[in-house]
Length: 217
Image 1 (cartoon, one colour):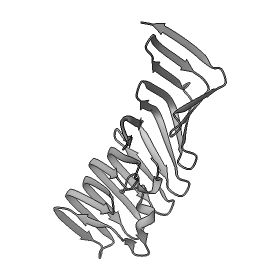
Image 2 (cartoon, rainbow, N blue to C red; image 1 turned 30 degrees about the vertical axis):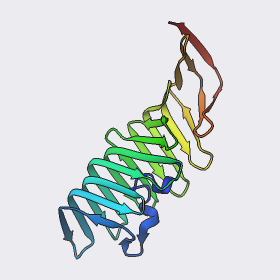
Image 3 (tube, helix red, strand yellow; image 1 turned 90 degrees about the horizontal axis):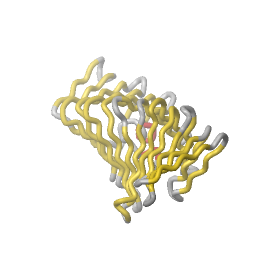
Image 4 (tube, rainbow, N blue to C red; image 1 turned 180 degrees about the vertical axis):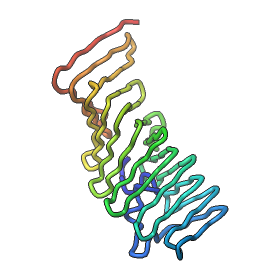
């Protein structure tokens, strides 16, 4: 989740590769391609792969609406961003849609985002929820309903999650948000009106109505 514009090539980087005539700077392969309405609508079907540099995305089906600058994908969506020297990011979903006019995208169907430290394979961050909305210009991600963050021995849940790529922090609200932590002596559970997770620093801040519960093993 380091570079929002390169997380998921299907929707997150689509804004950066759209030209006046539609998508450019991409290598796209598929079993079948169908062009309709004089090339205004293009459908790629079967083992679709979209690649740009060290970023690639695969899906069963991709449709491009060139005039509307709209892109949809469905079926076993898998995106990999290996452009960073320090981290690798992967995205999984069943459905994705990108709107060029608003420069935002949506992931649905069990969407999950993984961020792995290349120097420490155990340092793995998982973020998921029912609906993932991505705003490319603002470099922000919003997850609504059943938002969840997993990292090593920590799990955090809430109804809403906001990720700011510039500040590299996750803000969890509504629910209320909760954090579950496993320790050598037992388990701990915290709740608050707002929980802030700093991705790179592995630091947590809880604000307003903070409650803690400890369970010895």
